[in-house]
Image (cartoon, rainbow, N blue to C red; front, side):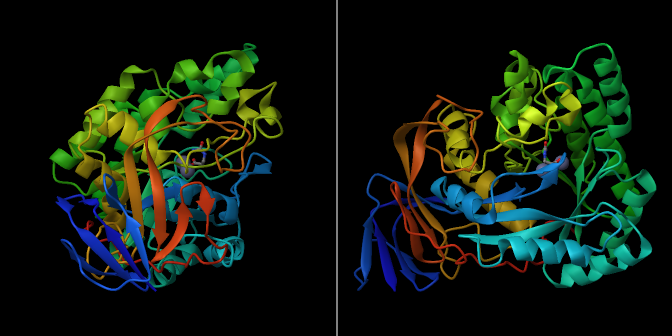
Length: 459
Ligand code: URP
Ligand code: ZN
Ligand code: ZN
């Protein structure tokens, strides 16, 4: 199958070019002006942009959390991702406490293989650092699971102490993996949260006030310093606060291999959204939404490359059945927000149109940098020989975000009623059109597991 995309403007991280694209099979075969070639199908991209399919390196399909599971499956979640212009996800497999990494990995293959509609890889959450687990990490890196998430938050669930984190970092210094850190001081947070509940402050809003941004800054500094001594790179996930960004910037200015992502919820939403009684539970995630003054600093961090990636941390729980679990105690609200479908458009609308990001930087933070950071050299750019994961993007299309029209399997949207400009018109996954306007042409199981390389950014 040969597909010709004509008349579009190719927006890559490093250049913007008016050119046609010939896709042959699964790869980009030719890029050139006014291509005169035979094709089975022609897509007219006049007036549109052609960008590399976006890559969301932080999703949680079916994550067990707080006695329930994140609602989207690999089928529903990847379909929704595709409608939003995302053609690759990297999801977090979870080591069961007391179990092996292998058990966690097998369970995630079971969930994803034969179901995902777009390509996918896995990171591995390590919830229980032991000698045998450290040895297992080496084998996983060889299998393409080249990144591992550890937590200074969630005591009793995913929490690891400093010694455990340090040992895992030493292991990646040897095997070429990357440690990803959820950096909040969970032990101190749990004290404040307990005091809030004892004082009768049980509303979702107090989830936000229990988790001080200073405790995110403290944990961010701590894990960067542990990584420095271990001689390993470190990647801070879902960075939300100025205090944490300051630490990443300080480390990078000193030449340390410290990296970080933020998420749309921290760029667009704020602690105020968590007021309004139990409605605020829709916005409960960790780290929590911050006071609005943090947002501009995060945008500046993206502009200056102190933040390299925007991911979603997509982790959807229904408002009615699932967030409800914490109606009387915010500590029991499952943590997480939906967003895998909205990232590309939100970043275009609030970033590119508002003049905070150039179109090229937008492509870089949603696609190119994620591909390079997480070892996917066949993705993240519109270039000859790379996978034909392509999005014909209309920078002028207006639409209104709503749970009544989105494709994620969750009963609310954090951005309900927001009018955004920009949208994916046509989406190709390895050369196959899977989204054409509102029409779905994808297939569960067509997405392939991606065996990732060690990241070239790291050393
Ligand atoms: O609230 C969040 N972020 N839920 C997902 C789990 C995590 O910590 O990433
Ligand atoms: Zn986390
Ligand atoms: Zn997460």
